[in-house]
Length: 372
Image (tube, rainbow, N blue to C red; front, side):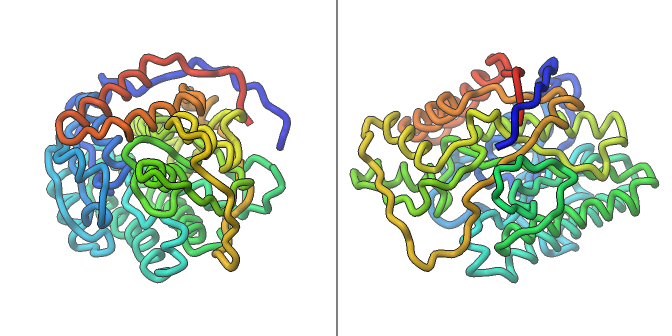
């Protein structure tokens, strides 16, 4: 792993004065990250218009919470350009945050064509619709830290590094980066389309129930009283609470609305080095916080699809130019996640728990001492 680079900033939080009354189109609002984004934007006073084809089958944060404080909750396939164009026309957004995606690596092996269609052509449909608005509208396209050509050397990727992707999901996100940059360069001079991409590390947080993700798999097993089998305990990832990258997306949108210089650029939002740890270390912490320290065991899975063993991000660009910095240490992030999972709250009670954690996050001083 690289030596630490000092990254002293004056950390910022999203500005309620910017968001108050602003029309925001949030695609993928029924997803895990989308629900958290909806609630934070509402707390900031934004008018949130959601567009999604619905939550994944089974348990989800969206279905547990019951309803979100949205100006509109629309259903539509992001791959259908006519549907997206009509939704954009109804919303007349002043900011777009694009979260809608097929976001699971293992699912991409099973359904590669659908993964590329949703992630790549869905982004094209959205950018086409916004391009024809005729008004300045920043678009934050959320991709992934897995978009890099990762040689697993311990090097912390910076935004200008080559794109790649071993699996269909990672490759699709690299394609999205190219699409977004092409739109920014081709149409940004017209002044209305300001496109920036955001690449985040592995997020954790209460309410994530997606299959084949570490913390949700642990919680399902621990709640059922069984030992959870972990296939790659030595794999290293940049772990962070979901609110960390969301803070970055909102700051990036504010900057894009004020200044076109961010258009066409990619931005990393990753944790401090102390949160770049193994899968096994996260599993051990979650089990300890649950009160079951022996709740997992390493179980290699022969013939399983390729997944990177090591991934690191350098976020100095976001620190220096957006004044973004992580606020929660990994222990705090995992403790908040476990607390929400254990609360068994639903409906308005769950809404209050999530909003309370957002308030706790906002009140926590950022850690500004160093970055990868």
